[in-house]
Amino acid sequence: VRVVSDPLALRAELDRERSSGRSVGFVPTMGYLHDGHVSLVTPARQNNDVVVVSIFVNPLQFGPNEDFEKYPRDDARDNAICESAGADIIFRPDVSTMYGNGEQFTVDVGRIGTVLEGASRPGHFNGVATVVAKLFNIIGPCRAYFGQKDAQQLAVIRRLVDSFNIPVDVIGRETIREEDGLAMSSRNVYLSDEERRRSVALFQGLMLVKEEFERGITDSPSLVHAAEMHIRKASIEIDYIRIADPETFQELPEAKSGAVIVGAVRVGATRLIDNVTI
Ligand code: AMP
Image 1 (tube, rainbow, N blue to C red):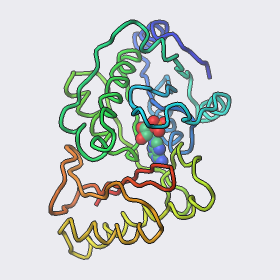
Image 2: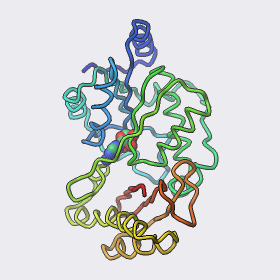
Image 3: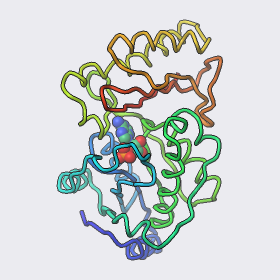
Image 4: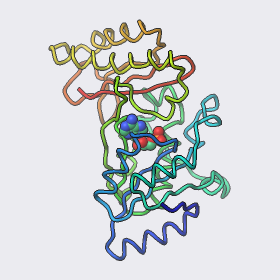
């Protein structure tokens, strides 16, 4: 795998590939890679001629009191994981390369950016959409792979591509979990052993909602209540547990098939999110 940091050189190289009829698969990440990321690189490898993984911890999507400074980083390990997953190119730009050319315009994602994860993290989805728009322009026409783990983010990316007619085919992939059900995340490294054992209650709570829905209960407050009880029993502080429309992420008073149960919690100092589709 080859590491590239210059956007213009990368775009020129990928344009040459496309001119020769070769397709590009793209996996944007913030690094500290795990099997969830690999599960995106694998189909990118299977279905495209050239595979690019970007690794960029995007300051724009972190709030002032969030973990940008201490977000886990390990370049050598990420390189090895990309290599063994079959990536051709790692795009690892500097912050100054991405944002250093004076005051830049940003993307405003509107209403979807103000609810649920967007309400808890003001500006987060504008930051995500801005960096992904830049990355899509750097990479050019491609298939881009995103995890359902970040369900609201995936919905934002789909609206972004539609809103600005970006020639990228967005592909969503299922959440990869640890054996006990905890969704894989770079942030899981923050958890102590004891917190790690308790943290599975989030996924279990979301699954409880799915099971109750399948038994015929559709009233969202009742469904969510069962999950909250289960999660609180594990001494986990809940940010939100809600049932939302999978495209707009507006809350649904009545659960329906295809809706997404989204949850955000704090286990000690670590914020975790997860979701399950019903
Ligand atoms: P991140 O590095 O956390 O920004 O994530 C980069 C991409 O990997 C995003 O599209 C995430 O949704 C996806 N991803 C992260 N964790 C998982 C997981 N456990 N399963 C599947 N995809 C994931």
